[in-house]
Length: 286
Image (cartoon, rainbow, N blue to C red; front, side):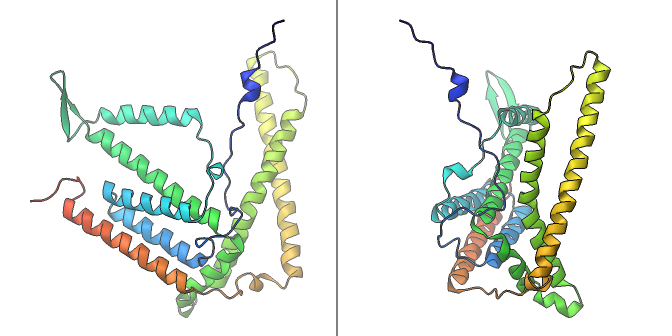
């Protein structure tokens, strides 16, 4: 007797979606770091890569991110699946950038080919992935409740200028808490909308009208859910003592944070020194 071949589509592993602003379960030295340390690290590395976006700086920061992910025990399942169409777009962008030419030039079958544009595109792509990984590390190792006290502590000098630092910290905290919650709500709304029966559209105009009507319905439902969630969050904040309690928690760096600061400064200083020595083109100066 012949058995039917299993359907490969049914065995296909479901794609992993992007998980943001939710720490990975567990604890590590990276999880225990002060949230302000992570924010300062992101700010310092962003400034470094803004002024020195060379391969050396990108490589050192990438090594730092990978080492931090190893120390934080970030599983591979936390990484989202990259869709195929994104790889196609990157390939098309690389081919388009290759037509720009530039130094260095290689000769292939007697034809000179400039690789400057392609190398610049690859450098910008690597820079984007490194920055995304840096933001993901902060998201996967930091509790959202720790962000507001850290921002309030870091912005304490600005209070002398009459800047509402506490209000800014509370706004950031509420936005970070509401963002994943609203994403889940929108996914539920979209799934519920797809389950509704649709009328068969026989003409192109009817299909366009159906798409527009569905978009209006989804936007209306999303606004309703957002307002309802905002009202519930406001009641919860009022019951717990007001917005002042969000940023009033004690938040200070510890001994491990100073060690992390020292490592970060050493990496940034090494990147700057090597970039200045070799130049942005990567060619050593004589």
